[in-house]
Length: 109
Image 1 (cartoon, rainbow, N blue to C red):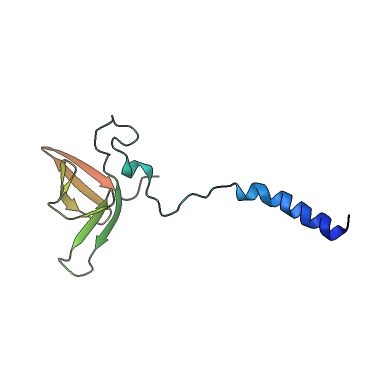
Image 2 (image 1 turned 180 degrees about the vertical axis):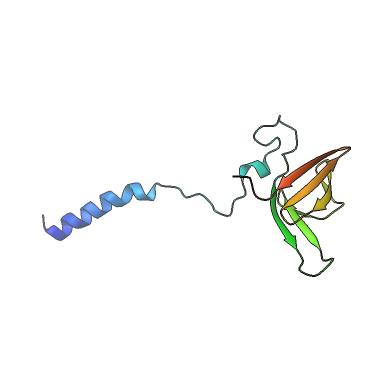
């Protein structure tokens, strides 16, 4: 067998397993966003609110918008059964009746 034919055959053999690998879609949202109950909840319960981004206007008194579970929300809007009480630069405060929950943009190290 000629060396060129040998190299071509070897390249075809090595290329086969590489084609079988699947790649993850980098644009697909996290699984917890699309599943009722999230990872730790019971089926049928809403997913725990997850703060993904905060947008703050540079102008004094400007708009503050948060992205929670893929939805843009402002103060006074609902997230599940909670109401957005405050949008800070790195956190959002949600109110459920008399209890409050603070969602932080950055986790503590």
